[in-house]
Image 1 (cartoon, rainbow, N blue to C red):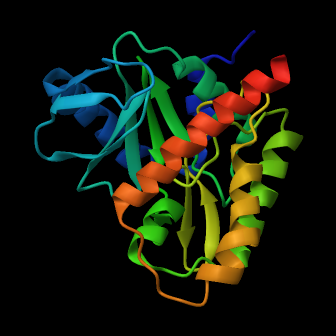
Image 2 (image 1 turned 135 degrees about the vertical axis):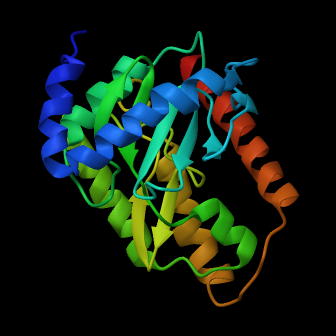
Length: 237
């Protein structure tokens, strides 16, 4: 598999971002963030662990590959740093190159040395919406569906699209994590989530401000993972 040169990608992306702000942010990444950052991946299927990050940088969140950080002076940009030993940086770079600029996805403005500078996506995950009892309009699901179709038209394979990887902002849908969009193996997570939305959420929960505790949501998530493994195993027999 071949990938574009990061230098080419940077030159193209800088046309859509203030070059001076980007230059100052990159300088802060190299001088303040990376030298003082302690991040590691202990188990490949669990989120990475960030042991230390110093102000003015703050941790936004973690995934199985990387941590996401932001600087208070550059609220419209975030930095995704891959943990040492975790692969996928080049693949995610290629995904953003293919996606280009699309309202439902983030956008990459700079990439080097296992980190990416990305456009900030504001919103709340559908997972957290269920916890807070926020209504999820059908428009959100339709937006995400169209965004995934767009990704497929770019030669990508939407993968691992679930409630913690998609967001809602002002009644519109966003896709947060695209790191696995080059994996060609089938993934039914989004189709299963849509079924749960139309068959369970709309008729039973959408009329009430029902807040589900995280332990219940985590139990559902764990049960679904087990169901998915069993379904995959049965399909292989």
